[in-house]
Image (tube, rainbow, N blue to C red):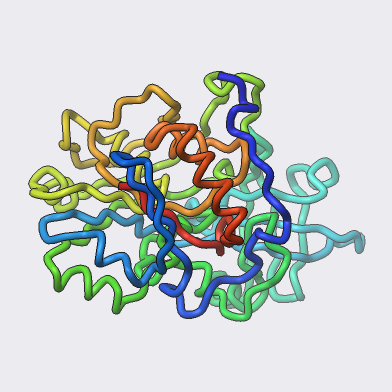
Length: 336
């Protein structure tokens, strides 16, 4: 399929620069696949569409990345984007200017930390080591910035606003943004009406922001991302009496990667390169909650595989007309 089939006109004015407050007051577009109809609601009305016996699956990864701005000992400016910790004070990171920061270079951050560049990995990644008088995990919140997506130009006053309320397993370079709409109270309402809430983990890589790299959709290569499905989560999914509702494309890819049959997954941890394109037969997921994605992205291709490209693009064009807010801090879509 030609990548241009997943294009649409997205006005820059509709790219949300800050989150809706409260979280669950964002808009919710509801797509009914069976009737090809669309409703316009609010996210706090989600309980009207879920019912007892449904299993709601969320990704509990936590953004651990930090953007550090500093200088080289010679005085030149430098930037280090810490992606995720490895061990012994070492991280995987991206650095700028890459060519001028070879192995052995140092970056000084606010006289509170030194970043030593120790090795080079594929894809431009580096291995860096953090040195500071205090433990690095105590210093980072004081000197680092939350690495928001490149299309968001406004810094957050509260870094926790780029975390889901249930984020607990550090390791992501970006938030699983479909989950940003949930509040503790909304999750309690859903559980009170008999919806089972289950958590899996997939650590999101920066590849999530990259558009399709090829002219043909199928030729695009997915970078690997690590996921974990606990025995408890697998048992809940396998025993589901109602629908299995996945929150976000990361959760969809985790469940489908762990699938061992119709509506069955196996527990464990693994790296997934799963790339879902139209024609894919979904084994586990019955319904999804997602945000509105950029044109020509793997996420848009995935939701098109689930609901049909024509229906999705019709919904996106309607969202533009109705002035929905797009991308990470934007509004949500429920596909049933």
